[in-house]
Image (cartoon, rainbow, N blue to C red; front, side, top):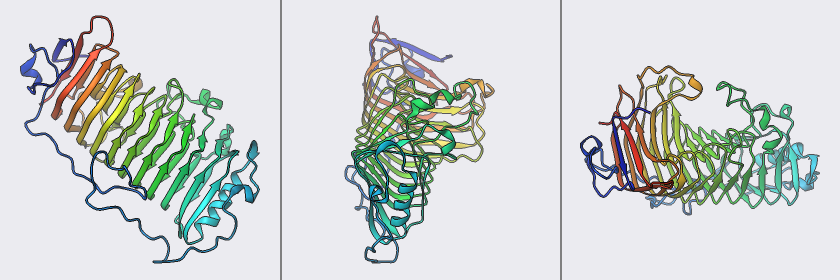
Length: 436
């Protein structure tokens, strides 16, 4: 990697805040690239379960969910049972329970008030579950048992469990959503072909508002474990996500084109990004997350497609990242197709434990050599603060700021960054290019 400034030190420390270009001979690499530190706005706590929602922030007013259906409507008796076992599902791990889950959804969705669908103890095998709205009720899906995604890929059109156009919805319990990824991971060719056929995501929340996912486990997804798209006011709390570090494209949580998203007290082990934040996403709060193995907490990739929108107001606090290939990463395509901004990010109180590249901004991202090295990025990276980042790096290169030739990063700040190389020699490097 080409760098305009390169330094060697026993640790990375931000006790001074001087521009990198002016401090090339100094013993410290943590610096301030802007005169004023960005102070992000505090959003209202999202979702129907706002406890612990904002990462270290107190909302201006408590969130009050909208009343579903007719204003003040009393709960109605659903047309049929909401417990899938009462509908005929068998929790033996082999019988197909798809129809029973869909029938329980239909019964709950067409009722009023708050309705609770129950997945009782047992192992329930299903194919695609398209849980469509809009509904006239608020729905809680209580997961006491386990849902297993069939290994027959012909059973899916796109995703496995897809919640679509649903407001006031919650999944809670202590059960497992098991994608049974090992049955199909050999069909994933994305490491060879970037325009590959996408395998089913496990849980998808599309075009929905006021959604809570709490307490459950997502395991061994075929592709992403949890994908949030075009949604707002979503809380992910006390969730466990687990898959092997070498499982292909098994991102923990992906968020795209969504607003007011909280991810708190969640543990993620994945074969790709623990959390990935895509274009068009604003007001994300990540707090108390444990990440690893995986590829860290990422924003991007940005600029791959036309008409992508800005990513703005992202706060990541009090997280631990362990044994990952990256730590905190912002990545955009060098020959980006869209003109957009990644702006107003705060990373504060992050502990790195043997992370290969703890801090990285890469405006020249080009996986599988699918882009041209033109150096003409259209993605502006501005007002990014890294604060109180401590721990160990698995490589000497603990900080990499590889910004575009034509569009330098602006307003990048590092304060109290103390990262030590865990290998022999205990020397730490920073690689910095094109900052202003």
